Length: 202
Image (tube, rainbow, N blue to C red):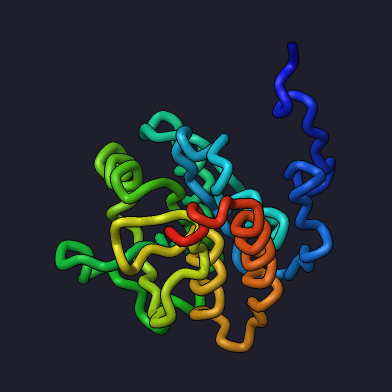
C-alpha cells in the first residue's frame, strides 16, 4: 500500500508540498553579484535546507553539489575570470586575505558553502584552493531566524541568511527583507505543523 508521503502533491514552482507551498511569499530580488553555492551531497534532500529558498529569492543563484576538488574542477576554471570572495568566518590563518574595502567594491562573485559545520570543514580540507580566496566575513549581531534547524555554533546562519547578509554588506542599500520574509514563512509553516511538545524545543 502506498504511503501518505507518496501521495503528496508538490508545487511545480517552489518544489515544496502543496500543503507547505511558499509561493505567496516569493518576491525575487535582482543583485549584481553572482551567488555560487557549493552544496554538500548530504544537504540536497534535507527537508530543512534553505538553498531552495535562496534560489527562489535570487533566481540567478548557481548551486553545485559536491565535496572533493574533482567535483568543483569546472567551477575553478569558471572562477578564474571573476573577482571572487568566499563567505566564511575568519580565522588567524586567513587574516591576510580578508576582503578589504577596496576589493569589496570589485567583487562580482560570492562563494558559499552549504552543509553542517563538520561537513563544511571537510569540504575546506578537501579543497585547499578555497582557503586561498579572499574571505568575506559577516558582521551580523542578531543571530539566525532559522530556528527550525539547530546548530552547535552561536554564529551559525542558514545559507540564505549568509548570502543576503553578505550581499547587503557589499551594498548597504540593498533591500533583503523579501528574502528574509520568505525564510520566515517557511519557518512559521514548519513550526505550525510540529506537535506542541516538539515546538517547545525551538
